[in-house]
Amino acid sequence: MKGWVSVPTETLRAARQRLGLSYKTMAEVVPIGMSRYIRWEREGRVGSELFDRIAEVLELDVTRPEPIQVLIAEPPDALSMLQALDRRLEAVETQLGELQTLLRSVLSQSEPGDEDRVLIARPQRPEFEAAEHAR
Image (cartoon, rainbow, N blue to C red; front, side, top):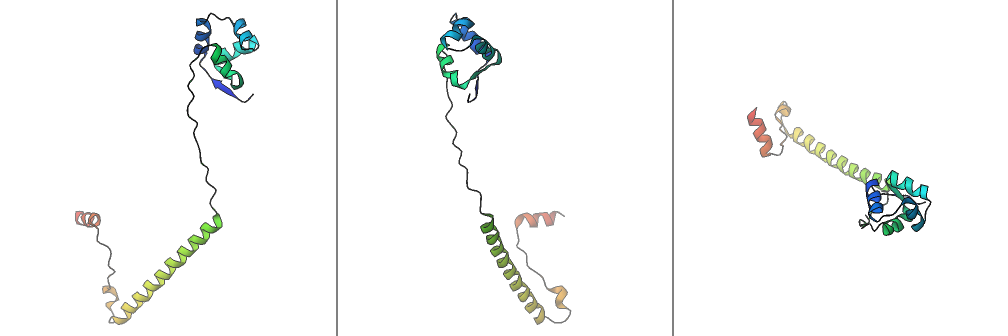
């Protein structure tokens, strides 16, 4: 058996009774063992291998949802990702070294004691300015 199809107990019972079918007749027409059909109707599930036949006999209008397609991507190559991150880190370290060199150059051109007056410019953003004025 592949699986189950859930069908409300009341739907199965009402359809069978509407057609005037007994459990015995239902079991003969499908064909299926009577106790098996009774159990399925009581549990509200039908074996998937006989669902279409039972739905046909009970004249059930069955609407099947469109299948969902799932694309599973290949797992990322961890080594190449680490190598790319390593290259980025090297670039950031290079830029940091250049900034340190520039800062040393600025500081070396200033007079002794000017170190405290060297300002590092920061970008001006309206939301930061408003927050600073609010304080």
